[in-house]
Structures are given as structure tokens and as C-alpha cells.
Length: 208
Image 1 (tube, rainbow, N blue to C red):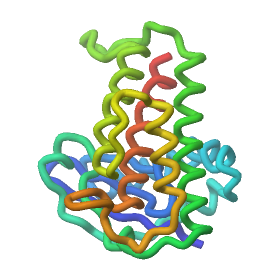
Image 2: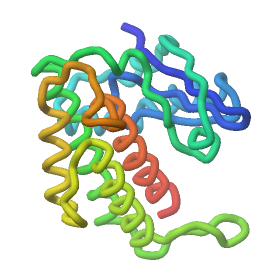
Image 3: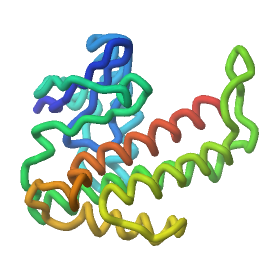
Image 4: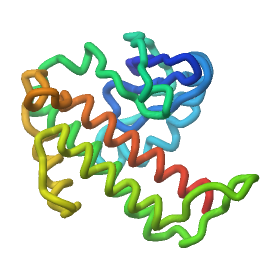
């Protein structure tokens, strides 16, 4: 069974996101480049699915089918998938919600494991740029506090409580509507949060 993907395009950056696999998302300068990178990262996503106890074959998952193409915005161009797909407006039953929450939780677990085993100082880029492990960890925490507000969760800087509340939100059946006025759709929220966590987990792994 092919993996459903949405393409989000801005002038100089394109994201390819696996719609039913939060966190499995890659970008490139073109749709073709983003899709190729997404397929190439199937093996790196497999441990997330295993951690969530969800069946995943990296070989089968690499067969991608573009379900939607979305016009991106300034956030897309800056470097984050910013547009919810029509697929993410669909209602989510109890089984689907439990699966969604398990996958997001597995993304957090992978990130925490990577941080716990990575050196404090990471390899820098050719011009000496890039953040070290603890700065990346702080950045991810600050982003999750901000993202949680888009899902109606305001718990200060208590990250364990925020994550628990997010999992409760993702793990509850949804009618496909945004959480509150100007809030995020639960499916999109899960995709955005998981993408950010895994993107930085893989960055730390690559620079360790």
C-alpha cells in the first residue's frame, strides 16, 4: 500500500510529508528532491514506528503517492511545513487517535534517547555554524511550548506536563475541526510537532 504524501511548495523550498506518519517529512529545492529525500529516510523513520508498536515496512513505505499539493507561505520558505492538508480535516476515531499519539510519543522518545547519548559539542558546518546539543534541546523545548498553545495547552514551561497534555489531545477522537479559534487541527499539530522533533534528532545524530 502506497504512502500518502502532501507536497507543500514555496518558491525556494518544498516539503514532502507522509500524511499518516507524523514526523516523516523532508524538504528540498523541488518536489522531486523532497520526495526522493523522504523515500531515502524511510529506514530512519522505522524505529519511530517500532517504538509506537505500529507495523511499518521501510521498503513498502518508500512507494509514495502524492495525495495533495499545497501552496506554501513565508513559513514554508523559512523552513517549516505550515499548511494543513485537506486529509487532516478528516475525523479521527479512537483507534486512529491512539495510533497518532503513539507515533508522536515515539518521536519524543527517540529525540530524548539521541540527546542522552550525543556529545555535548557537535560537529560544526564548513563555516563553523550550527548549535550544540543542549542549545538544540532548548530550542525544541521552546518550540513545543509555543506549538502547544496552538492546541489550547498553556502550562508554562513544564515540558513533561505539556507533552502529556499533547498526547491526551492527539489520543482523543477528533471531528477534524481546529482546537479553538485560530488553533491547529490535531492531525496537523501532530505532524508539525513530530517533524520538528525528528528533524533535530536526526541533525544531532548526523553531527555527533
